[in-house]
Length: 236
Image 1 (cartoon, rainbow, N blue to C red):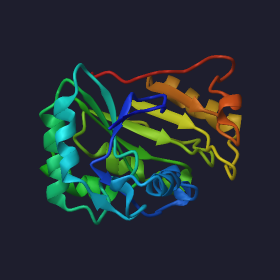
Image 2 (cartoon, helix red, strand yellow):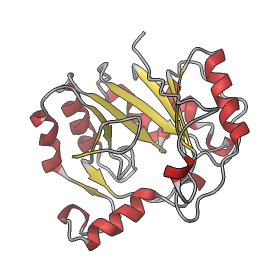
Image 3 (tube, rainbow, N blue to C red):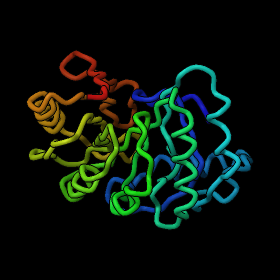
């Protein structure tokens, strides 16, 4: 685990690492780039770079945390990757179920498998489930998420690389929006961001603006119309 600079969480926990690209949002995957750096630094967990790996020893880590944490699960992977054994996914959920003091945020680009396993998963209140929706080509991911039994459901529209003018936000509790960062980052229109914000306001859904991104994301900042938007969901 590690403290995180990601604005909408506090720390990361990676019981699996590695992945492969499935849509346009993956083109400049930060986790792939970071894995290469960590491998070069000699970190054992990343000795295979970005190849998919499970780490059973990491399952013990949340039991040692003191005080409530907000935790992004698998920032360096996708828990619902087709090559992760079902029994390991169930083991990750068991850890989350047994640590109700912590809030676990799980994000996937593979909602088909998420829904397939839904009935086998114990959706305790502390597990927030999200899908990545970077443009309209993958908007169907929301329907898979909507049909799960997760108590809190969220969308990560990051990197936002196209407009999302007609989101069906029924049963969605939280929307995160952010631009792509890095040397080859694709531009994000402010109109896209304001449109999503308006849809969230219309549906009374928590809205979080993470960043404008770009080559220098710190300089670009995260203010939208001069204001920070740090909305977080709450159980109904």
